[in-house]
Image (tube, rainbow, N blue to C red; front, side, top):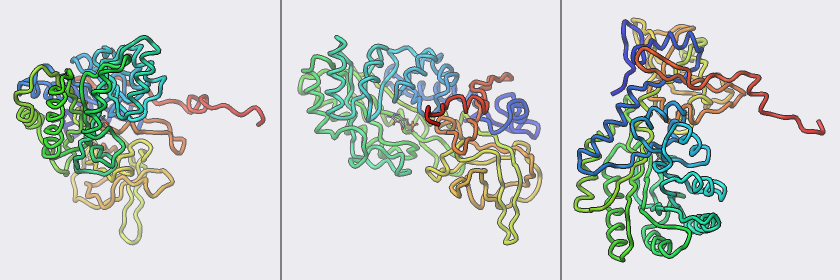
Length: 423
Ligand code: PLP
């Protein structure tokens, strides 16, 4: 459920008409609903607690939507943060996420980033390879610290969905095999600079079937039991993120309740363990839309009709990158027959096509449209390609809204660059 609805013939976010925001802030613009963010976090937490999984650490995956106001909205509910760079650690801290709720993931952390994470006091560094374990050990020892680490396991499970966001097969770059994890965990227990506290996995994103998750989690449970049988302490089991969000017209993901019940079944009887989760998309995707304006409609003699928007692939990369589907809705729908449109942006690439032959109600130049389910991996993946300014971000709460990332100016954009001394 989300809080983008037609009210009085106009698409609104909570109690604010999207047209009002577009008028005041300009387009393209990302708009987020506080109520939807809060609801998604709370529904997940309640489902996990209700299934008897104790008080989990829900470390929201910052990469999905890293706006500090979004992070703060979730932090106020008790969310932690799953981060993959020093920049994301800094964002989480700026949003008020306590360091002891920050989990540091990622296949290629630098020594500098590891040192920063240790200074900050993050709760766990998710180690993804043997060389990384040695690097964390060395950095921590040099600082006179002992780093809490979890070993990221690649459980060799096909998550389904798009190949670019599948992460749990043996040939993906993430984590170590189950047998390597067992050996690394035992080695880590004997290292002066690290303390193994748990194991972690994350098999992909936009997962719409519980079966691969269940297969992976079964392997993780068996691993915890083997480690404990060897006399090694395991305090935390981090099951990653990956549960899909409902994108209109796409396979429907399992509910948080079904997800939690499956985990409770797989983990039954496993005691003295804290469960951790790293959800991104399921919390943020349906909490945001990208609002764009129709620049013109280019009608070809062969009947093809291009709807040219002021938003482009630099603002919302998912269709070009993953062939992702976003429902597109007129902000003030007109009565009339549906007709097919190719919806495109102004960038000089044919890849800057959001969709082809999409049936849409009547539209005219100047109309506003909203890309639904754009709150995750939308603004976070945007760029200034074609020297287009980053789209601003707006957070709505009830009848109020705030610009939480203003549109930069062209002077801001140019001020970041220097000329070379010989030019
Ligand atoms: N955790 C890790 C380690 C990830 O790599 C990702 C996504 O790439 C996530 C969590 C979040 O995944 P999702 O947004 O599908 O929940």
